[in-house]
Structures are given as C-alpha cells and as structure tokens.
Image (cartoon, rainbow, N blue to C red):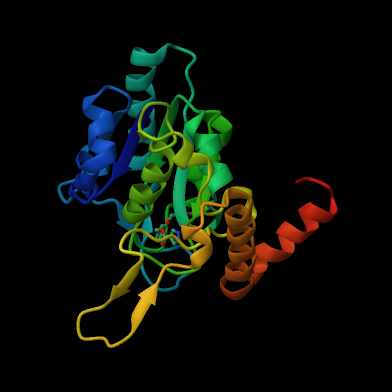
Length: 253
Ligand code: JET
C-alpha cells in the first residue's frame, strides 16, 4: 500500500517511523511519504491560509497550494503505480463522517491512500469539489470523534495505524485481528493474565481472576465472555447495543 500525507507539519508524522508502522515500512509493506504543503507556495511568506469570506473567526486554508500539492502527489504516485491509479483521498475533520473499524477494513483494501491534513478553520470547500469532480478522486471527510483538534495530523496517525495493522503480514497473530473490540458490534470482554490472585502494592484487597477462566470449560468461558461483552457495551456504549440487538433480530448473526 502507498500512503501520501500532505501537511504543514511534516515533523508531526514522525511517529510513523516507529513500532508497527515503522516495521511495516522497513519491510516494504507500506510505502509512506510525507509532503510539506508549503513546498507548493510561491509567495515570500509561504502562506497557506487567508481570512474567511463572509467573516468569522480564524483562517481558512487557501485552495492553490492544495491543488498543486494534489497534482504533484498524483503525478508521483502514478509514475510508481501506473497511469490510471487513483487514490482514495481522506480528509480528517470534525465535520466528517465517523471513522469506524469497518471503514478501516475497507481502506486496508485500497492500494493508495492520500491524507490531507487541514488546520485552522479548515480547507476551502472548493478543494473538495476539485478533488472529486476534476481529479475524480473518491474523497472522504472522516471524523475521529466529536471533539476538535488543531489539525488533521493526529487523526492521520490514528487512521493510518488502524488501517496498516490490518494489512496482510503486518500483525503477527492474524487471529487477534478478527476477535477484538468493535468486531461484531460489541465491546471486547475483560482480559486477565497471571497471577491468578494479585494484591496491588499498598492495597489490602486481593483480587482474583474470575473462576470460570481458570476452569478450562471452553463453552462456559465463551458464554461468560459474551455476557461480559453485552454488559460492558450496555454500560459504556448503549448506542452500539441497540444496533447489535437490531442485527440479531434480523438474524444477521
Ligand atoms: C478532527 C478529526 O479536528 C479534527 O481534524 C482536524 C481539523 C481541524 C480543523 C480543521 C480541519 O479541516 C479539515 C477540513 O475538513 C472539511 O477542511 C481539520 C476531529 N475529529 N476528527
């Protein structure tokens, strides 16, 4: 998979050199390139923003550097992947559609992703239209959640990690990918390891691993874990539980 990130803070993406993603890159599973948007500015101040038409707080990212950056990245990617290659363009933003695990799986199937990191109050809306209509890109504004970040960079780190760990060969234990939180629409069950009885330093409470997990009755363990998933989802994410119940009523699982 090829991934291009366009940002005014390339250093912000340094964590992509580390850990799982860094390893996937050195092993050649991911070709990840970070581009400085200011490379496509031509004025003395390398300006990427301007005041919003219609007034209001803050600044808006100018369309011109974005159009040139996208053209250059498309040219570069097509020289590598072929003349009719077309990336999915992902623009993180608080006004996007929620990014979910099914979307991570969908993006993991795509050979080429381009991330556009907005800052300030966002990118001039015509860049989205240009990307969709003139460049023909599948363009998606995605949100990590209902809160505001200073820019898309942190969201790109999160989305890239969610996607890259799903690529074949990146995570050692493939089974750990199918059986985890949000797969199947429920939160994951609680997990425990040794010792079976444990007292925290300074505590006078000894805490035990639930007996069912020590018993080796795998059917019973599966039932217990499912009940835990339901209880935990009802407590923390009642919104997920209603969707899960609807899918069960449908006979979907
Ligand atoms: C975000 C992502 O804040 C988030 O993303 C960064 C961000 C901040 C401000 C503007 C911006 O513009 C992008 C754009 O999208 C239409 O123009 C992006 C919060 N949850 N998930």
